[in-house]
Amino acid sequence: MISKSEWQNADRRSRDRVDPPPTFEEVEALHRGDLSEEEADRVRDRLAQYPELARVFSASFAEEGDELTQEDIEADLAALRRRVPVVLPQRRSPSRVLAVAALLIITVALGGIVVWMVQHGPRRTITTRVLYADGHRGATVQTPIQLSTATDYLLKPVFRPARVYREYRLDLLDGNGTTIWSRGGLHREADGSYPVELSTEKLSSGLYQLVLYGVDGGNPDRLASYTIRLSAP
Image (cartoon, one colour):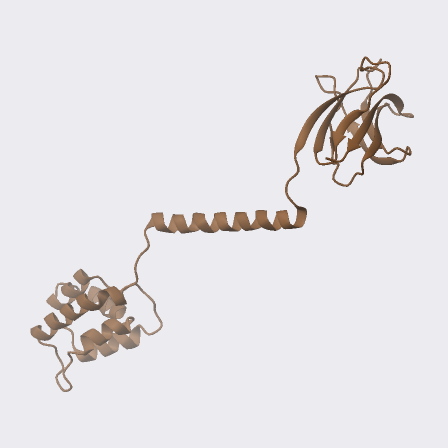
């Protein structure tokens, strides 16, 4: 049986430790005397770490007596069972923990998307357009290729050069002939195109020209041009 002095000693030994509370079975085995001395000490240490449990047991200690009676023990255990929902921490099931973790991940991801949209605006549509060179579209009067400033493009200008070059370059010129950007290091794809991305977000409406060059060490050779008209939606 547990004595008042044993309880106090266990409390002093375990002030700086944090362990899970003992189970009902361990407490009952302790009071029945079924545990070894080492196991009994561990149960007492864990009990001493939970003041609410300590008050349940210490409430039956006699002021002068050194040991608890069997009736005191049974009363203590009954009180412990009544109060354990308040005292014992609830263990979360793995599925609940995973669900909470998944919710946190989704919340963080959505928050990142919202921040990106605030900073960059909604994602723009990207459309693939195959372009045929001026003079190769079968019309006497060349009509500009119509594109919209509301859409970004993956342009695929098509052209078969008279000879193969080491690499190719595409320049985008505005209506005044000023180069807006240049994309080098391109290679002819199997479909005969030279893919390049065109963002129209910061471009004004008007005429532009995409020019294809063949690069092979010396001055680049101008191979083809593609007249483009950008229009607002």
